[in-house]
Amino acid sequence: MANLLNFKKIKAIFLSIILILLFNSFIPLHKYYLSLTEVTINSKKNTLDVSSKLFIDDLESELGKIENKKIDLSIALKSKEVEQLLFNYLNKNFKINVGGKLQKLEYVGYEIENDAIWCYLEVGHFKEKGTISILNTLLYERFPEQSNLINITWDGVSKTAKLSNPDKLAEFIF
Image 1 (cartoon, helix red, strand yellow):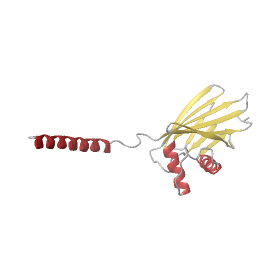
Image 2: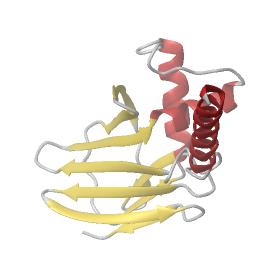
Image 3: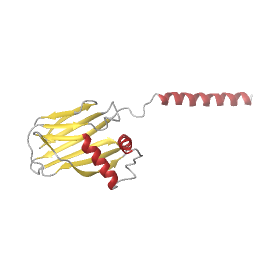
Image 4: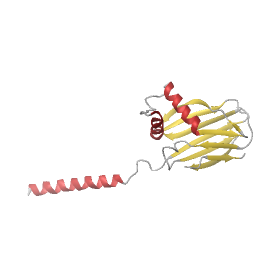
């Protein structure tokens, strides 16, 4: 009788493990691939600030592919080599054109927030006017289902665009 009870317990545990494994195999690692970029322009202060939020593991994967080695942004925080790699990547995949003039983005830094990374760029002495065109291909090469949300605020007036891979260009008229 004791052997029969033990067998039933082992069978129940085994079936529970199988069900858990089957259930978890249908849950994707990422439910979505999304970045958020905030562009803020203040004409009175002549500033253009860019803040981009990405999932850190996605960005590490992309940078690792480029460098052909493992990149850990949390360990390498503020390493000059990693910061240069990050700036080169951002500079290649994120561009702002205002009134027909490509803006020179300067790297400010980055910070980690839970499972995300905030990357900061700026345009020094911004004095442009006109239509804003933003090219954003962040993480497009690595993730075909990537979407990039752009919020732009110019002197308190806000507009938003969503780009889904392969769409890469958003235009804003203020």
